[in-house]
Image (cartoon, rainbow, N blue to C red):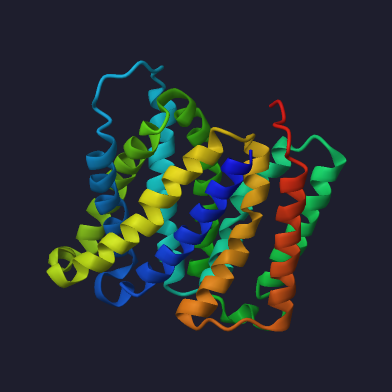
Length: 280
């Protein structure tokens, strides 16, 4: 369980650093092009490393695999679309409504609702509901909420795909996701995606945002209950907010830092309560 927890924390940090890097590509190739870099190059790297075409003994579950891959592709695309107009921390807070819904659906003990309630309080404080709400772009908010739906589906299908295909599920899922993102990226950015000077940053986005986090998240998904995985992800908005502050100069006020503390406390409480795997 501790190994799965460490893998998930590293995955979240890598994911947000990749998102901050990708946002710097938006002026050149747009959010669609950055998503194409992320999943297209990520798929090529994972194919070279994992070689999923090798014969192995495994149970086929094509519906789960395609559900995992398609949700992954759409989730990444709409999330990057949201980052065009709203801050990273707020986008992730809105996106978290998906995993939070999964956590609520799987809750059985009263203590679980305490941690979920604390996470919700933190999220409400992070959202600009106090006087700055008018500054949020409605389209950006809708894209982030759509990413939340994709994230929920990613959790549901990802656990099933991981059980059927093991580590190859990540490679195959990213490849399927690339089938969504790469055509959209080329339709928007065209030949700009082939600019050699952009390749190093594109590779960085692919490694930080896809190869590392999805591989580690699959480790966590297959070693902890979906409920625990979902509640632990409440730490994601805090990681995103700090990444936005450090790398994108997105300043936070005192209330938002209090919200981060509430989310961290909720995540820590969920982790302490998950020492023994729950039976789903």
